Length: 162
Picture (cartoon, rainbow, N blue to C red):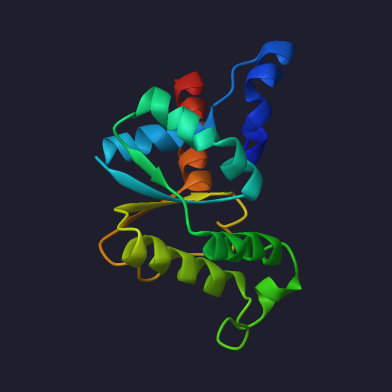
């Protein structure tokens, strides 16, 4: 399941359909652990943040890693960026549109790095992927949850076919 927020119901879904899931949140936590990150900045939906789904996952898999969320004004930019990644603004030139999702996510990344001191940023919403290839966030790692899931799917497919 590629939606981060939909993982709110992953245990129930897995139980009802009887099929295993590649848990995207677990995969991201494992990746952060492999990269030896300490403070992970989280760009995610308001719902995922409110339910602290990543917090719960990291507590189980990588308890030594701290999840850091943007301040409220920057969380509003995350939400605006996610919303605008799904409408026609995403096709506009980011140089001329302040509310372009690329600009929203860039501001949030700089806030997380400069103000919050994170050593990694997670794109915890798969809608971020189609509009935000980070260009300059310094020496900070950037983990795109959709890319992590795609790699896991390819690996599973290869293992099944071997």
